[in-house]
Length: 196
Image 1 (tube, one colour):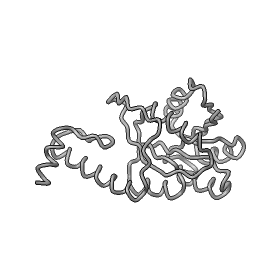
Image 2: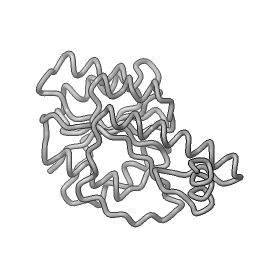
Image 3: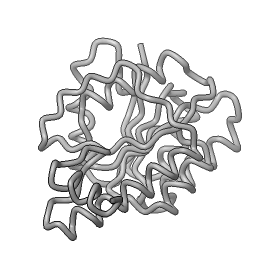
Image 4: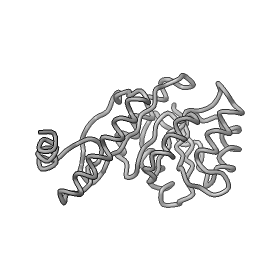
């Protein structure tokens, strides 16, 4: 069983995460915390394999929690998946530099989250490369991620800049901002015109 702790100050977000995972036979939610300080105590006591943590929380934010636990528990530290609506590049880089395994930008796809939990659960307390997942449940993306692509941090920065540039281009073309790295035909044509 993969032991998971949910940490989020938003009750609705906590409930959604719990409901998303409660029917998974190989995942057990050991507890829920509403802030970083409470979570730190629960991590020490319950020793979860994976912590699903929000970035912005009272008393101790997600990055502060990750840093505190990594400093105090070293190799016994759980893996962290940060789930946040914050897509600020500096915050994401800080999260990775402090030891998170994945950063998921809300809204998230439940199937992909479960796949990431299972992947980390199979490699508890081992070093993993980090990636950013940006999904949108509204698109009904049925992509099944058994093994998500591993993107080294330096290459991820390039992908992030490309994603920002594509989002800006999509706005100029009057399209909805793309999620992930999928492009519409209109955006592809606009890119082609700019590169020509």
